[in-house]
Image (cartoon, rainbow over all chains, first blue to last red; front, top):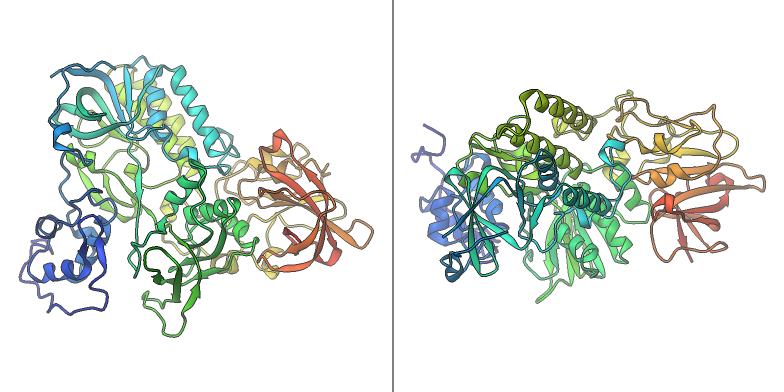
Length: 110
Length: 527
């Protein structure tokens, strides 16, 4: 059992902090407090946190906040950030409008 | 839907991607390079400083000139570079999906090299998302690519090479750098980069970090405070600066998402900067036909990225049968030797995190340099580049083992000796005759060489120093000589100004100071 799949680990109660209202994910306006609370509500992986709060799901796709979110979650879980599985990588890797993504060109000649 | 096939598809037209493309195209491969930016070259074109290394690594050449050479080499080799082409997906069997304009295009590469580089890290503090807080790399892009001054008064957070180099460039652009701050107790980048910032008068605050950035709709000020060993603020140590810009240079993270998407085995390796693919020595990932090179597989310098790129290009060429295994081995051995020589010295990847107290020569490291950015007067004499003798001679204030030797090549009088080991500290050779040509001063990427005549006969000493600021002072200009710390120490007069094509935009100022300041005066500030 890896350290992180052990859900019986006691991470203690959520303790409010003075900087909880600081925005961490700028694109989706998610605060530090929301992320910390989510961990205490049982969301221990980056994938879960992303689905739950949408942090890292906006225009920059977590380019700025991914590492910050990982650090915050790791601190709550009292583990090294390196132990946390990063978010899934999937296409489109960069923000792409649906009308563009669906517009598969007939001709490609470079 | 049509899929176009290439022998090799490279993602990223930076130093490693272009280098890979050149090697592959030279072997007759049909190569395309996609880059999401409007210009090729990655970060090379904003590097206006001279690079370290030796001749084979293009040392003493400015980064953007290396970029131009690389682009020309790629053009000559017949490499096709597609710009404004964003790779949005890397699927099974190396199918590459690229957004170009308002359409997505599909390509198939028999081999794929991912050379997507890295992005800047951020750090959280109160006010971090106010306009005016930006990555140091972003500030560099504004200045050096677009000719836009990022701000008037800037505080830099981060003392790695990026923080140090960008601080110097901010000064060159005419910004006032009010402080260089780092939470770590020691400066992370090259001492020579720190020293050239310190001697202009920029104070260093180590074991300090940002507590709060102030402002309502943009930055108007910043408060820093000292931190203890556990990076907790120490009450009562706050210092406030009025600034309009805060630059953050706290490391880079590999942009490795495409590799992960393709199913390459990954690891979280803090020594390499984060999520990186597990690769062999030449960039081969766990997925057949997919290679990686440059910062995406571990943060290093552009010089290393270019060699890694060539290695991946060669590996891909052999993988597809465009060269034999023997040819590959010969090429890779050559490249490995070159890369190995860059990965030596105090700042080598293998030494990251180590507490180094002595140079390879057994000389104690300057602790003042690590904590304040300059070598103290009572420390400087112990290094082999610093000597005293009658007449003009080079004084080389190079005190850490870094892979760099252009000074040795620059002097044809034998006044400077490094030897074959390019990380060795340069020696100012006592038994030699300096002809005052100034080539060593201009060639030093760390701006650490001064030509000193301790006694010009009239109670004065002359000091020739590298100068990369505008306006260039004129002969006869009077002002103050600044110490290594950047404090005015005495009156100084400019007695000679030299600019030459061979100096590549580093001008040489010769100042005259009272002779007791021969070993103290290291910069000039006009009145």
